[in-house]
Image (cartoon, rainbow, N blue to C red; front, side, top):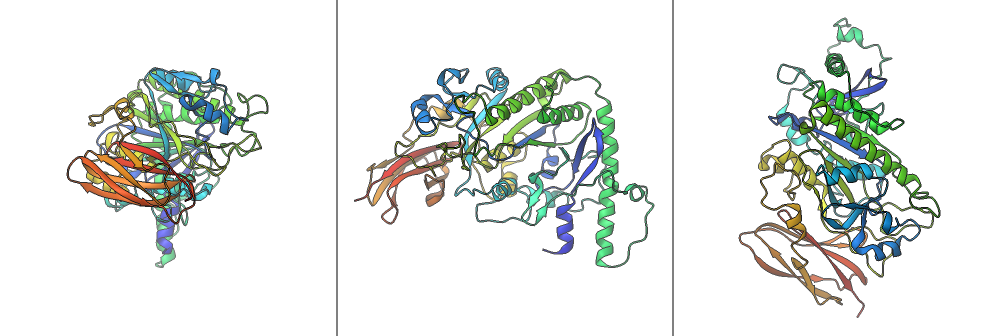
Length: 525
């Protein structure tokens, strides 16, 4: 990568001086995900909440319909069935007992959960997996821009020249916190530069600066000074917006995530046109001590989920108090989930698919997707099988929240991804309940169990249809169908598995908003 290109990727964000009650704010102008959102002609705001470390999905959304299997594979950390928080109109799943606030949000139709979100052939590295989530890359694909950067470069080719301006006087995105989030990482480093208040850049902002040499280094220095001038202008509008809000609803004390979200609510209500905010907390890498021995209702994971639930609940109530709740959509995510089976250290190891929560006035209440089947002959390496590609969540947000035309969404994400009817403004003619009630016959196989091969039969409503095979670790073994079908119908393909070891495999069907996962068992001949 050329030196100037590297500089552009690593200094797009600037750490502003501490201006919100001791909390630093980073302004991002041309980040790969963020600037695409400015193209939408609405006042919608997206708040991303990163749960760093890999959140354990099976102890976050407990599969009540398979409770005996759940308890069998993780008996030393399983949540007691009578303590799982019930959800309205959902007898199959419940929430961790620490999430009472988010249970209330769900029951008030302000929370949606998407089961088993991941990507094919997951990577178990924290850094690589987060890079995949943030750039929208495939497992073996390394992208030098964020997942929306392809669209952003087309939308604002001259950035930072001319920004801020009358059309967008405010930062396109803000991160609350003193450490740059991995959301701005690329394979070559950070997409942002933290500019601490101790740096003497105010003379540059006031145009008191030495002349730059007519060399490549001089060009780079000019670019850095442009970013510095922007940063100060952004600092002023941020302080002005924050000053407009003098009263907010109550937030829990000693909760870092809540403090970040309180600052976001202040800026949204203060009138910033900023499209996206980034907050986060760590601690979810729960290899050991996920629960306290003898009491699975306590321990690290319980405390973390309590903080998340209380922070998001307070934030939602504050947005309502400030009269801006209809503008905001929130999303939680982690770099991966955890394994199905617990380990001997009262914890769980790096896994794959995870639940993603969306919250706000405009989400559709429900749990999209089914509880994962847990094989009776399970192994320690078994992952929760992926049901939804994480880029399908991005696709839906871009389309239904930021109003990008579907063809532009496909261009931005480099492929066509599944569309999920989880936001109320959707034009989709199926809701979550209809999707989940379609039954278990969309994809079947015979024989099952099988030896060398099995026939997989699937139904499609027409349009793009995908049939993939995964092993229990989440590795993609084969793609049996990936094409557009002109008409609805039933089709059969053959899965040849003669060279594969015996064990459980998953056949996954994706067709428009529909998906279904079918467990299959291969036995030795």
